[in-house]
Image (spheres, one colour):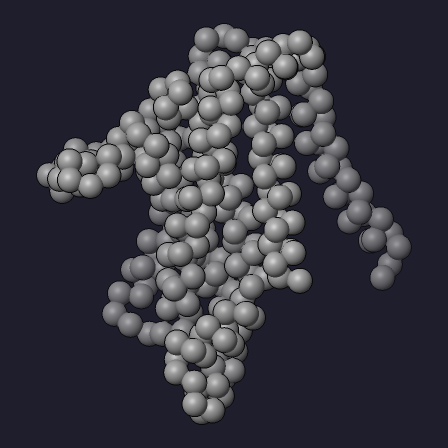
Length: 259
């Protein structure tokens, strides 16, 4: 490979890293060690950290539980409504999270939504609402990624397995699913990252009640609304720390199970 081209691509990568590094370093002018410790150890922030990670994990699991079979169906089969379903996957990408949250809020003000609220799980201004908001904003992306993964796995492998006596479900579980592991891992990491930083849909559906539905992104917004720039800078650092460390842990666990 041409050395000049190689240097250019590597330089571009380092330039991108430096750009984000400068942004993060700019927070140092607003944060003192004492302020960092005080904010990070406050009960309100600790609670926000806990529900942010917990909700992101649940929403990621739900998204994958739906995305794997849906992505497989869209990749392998022709059926009525396939194009409409494929188009619906784009909704979270073309509609802002705030609009998605508003749609959810309006749904729960319909008769069906009120019936669900009264008889089963309450979502509006509750923890399940956080999980639902994160699920709605990520399930389309996870499904799209997994559909692409299944598209790249030749269907003839499953056909051969079926000729050897396997059922379609067994062929999927024993042949296709193991081959799709790298794509599933990538979808897991991306979905979790998007969930933990989700703001718009969450604040619309679950609100911003301290010690109840205030996730870290919402907490950052509340500090900004109160003109607490130092507190906001500290929370941004905490969100970066929680998000990146959680992603590193997820990647480590996934890599270990994959190996």
